[in-house]
Amino acid sequence: MQPIVALLCGICGERLTERYFVAPDGLPRCSECRQMEPLFARAVAYGSYDLGLRELIHLLKYEQVRPAANVLGRMLADAIACLAPAFGAVEPVVVPVPLHREKLRQRGFNQSELIARAALKIRPAGQEWRLDTAVLERVRPTESQTGLTRPQRVENVRGAFAVRGDVAGREVLLVDDVFTTGTTAGECARVLRKAGAARVWVATVARVLRVEPAFQMPAREVEQESRPQPLKAVAAGV
Image 1: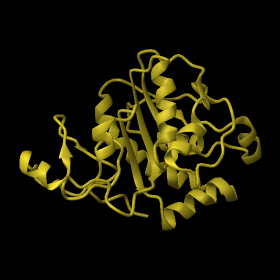
Image 2: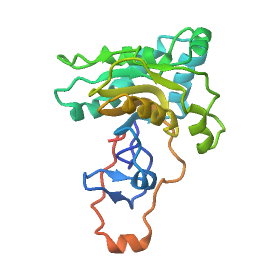
Image 3: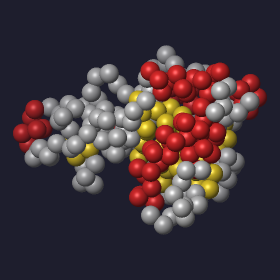
Image 4: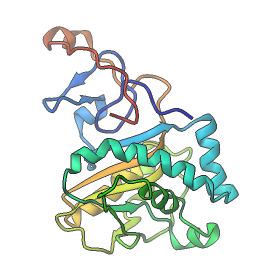
């Protein structure tokens, strides 16, 4: 279970090709983020959602092996560390993606909350980031996103979340176990920003990476734009 080592989009963390577009802020962009940036400022993940990491997440979620949360928490802490410089002296409120009350009753715990609590135990000295599980509520149950098209995923989570805490002017760090297509994170970011959050950042243990590269710049654009120096491989979306 190794961290992601690949060329990734600097916003959503999707896999890129060797040819890519670099925005004025210096971060490479996939085609989707270039056309329309997500409502979250940036998303990072520790590893790819496959093999051992997927099995470990399933042990926690479906087999209720709670000690797995401590291992996953260390991975999430590594992902969060990539975002920490963006906050500076500002202490973000850490918000786990919530489960609907029916799902929470069935499972007995929210895996995202357990992983987040484990991650925050590893925070550097002097870093007092606050976990707040009351900020965000899943107000209606949703279907599994597995097998749904992107428009169906968006519709599935539309209106599923509501903000119950004060986030006006705050930096919010949204945490979850897996980032699949970003529709859940995007909907959470939408309602949080509508409630006044300054920015929403996303950190997850794992990310589903496309088998094929996300973006290859057309040759005519390569000729028209100066090609940037190749970036070194990066871990956890940085």
